[in-house]
Image (cartoon, rainbow, N blue to C red):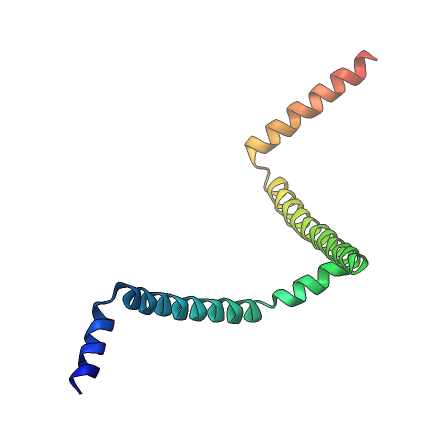
Length: 118
């Protein structure tokens, strides 16, 4: 019985045994980290992205549709914004705001002078 206790004490004191235990714990930590990364990659659907880029014509098609949608959105947005700006300017001219009125009058005067010179 004492021999077994001595063997256990020898293993604890043995630097190789201690290094083996440390390696085992590092190995277990590494395995847990790899499993965590694998789970994260599955959640992020990385396989779908890889499959998507394996088909270049699909990428071109999707990017074309995205560009058309962006262009349509920009056109609609500028139209709405332009309509609002024109509405505000129209209302301000009806009220005859002096600053804008004098600015427009100056532009008209310059244009008439330039047209008169020709």
